[in-house]
Structure formats: structure tokens, C-alpha cells
Amino acid sequence: MGCSRWTWINADYFFNLILQRPRAKTIGRVADLITGDVISVDFNPQNNDGIDHTMLVSKKANDGTIYLAYHTSNTLDKTFYELYNQSPGAKFYAWSLLPSYY
Image (cartoon, rainbow, N blue to C red):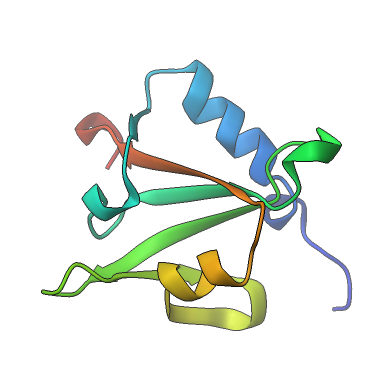
């Protein structure tokens, strides 16, 4: 299967969909995310090529740690802290889907 699927290579389209239509609201702080919420990330905002990746909040621990799931290497429960520290200069966008879109 070595090729990327259209649905997996269009994080920027998804970002623009939820940005331009009332399907989600922005969350000011990642710490306020809950399970099922979405994080969009632009790993290199200086190149103006849009959003590079989308992740889902897979769980939130009692201590507030946010865990993420995403398709790269079938990742499950990587902490946001780990991702943030591995991505200097990246811009993160936190979203909560509106109840009518669950």
C-alpha cells in the first residue's frame, strides 16, 4: 500500500472546514481539551503551507495530562507534552466539536 490516502493527507482541508463553518469552537488552552476534542498543528508556520496534521484527544488523565491518537505509526496515547517538546516552533490549534456534530 505505500501511497498516502486522500483522507489522510488533507489535514488543512479539515482545519478550514471546522474554521469556516460552525462545526467546532476554538479552545484557548490545550489544558481545557477533553476526550474526543481535536488538535490541528502546523509544524512549520513560516512556510505558509497550512496545517500539517490532525490529532484526537484519546484521553485526559486526572492530573490533566492530555493524550493524543493519530495515524502516524498508529500512535495511541502520546502525551501532548511529548509532541510539543518534539515540535519547536509549531503552532497548535485546539478545537471542541459542537454537540450537533458528535
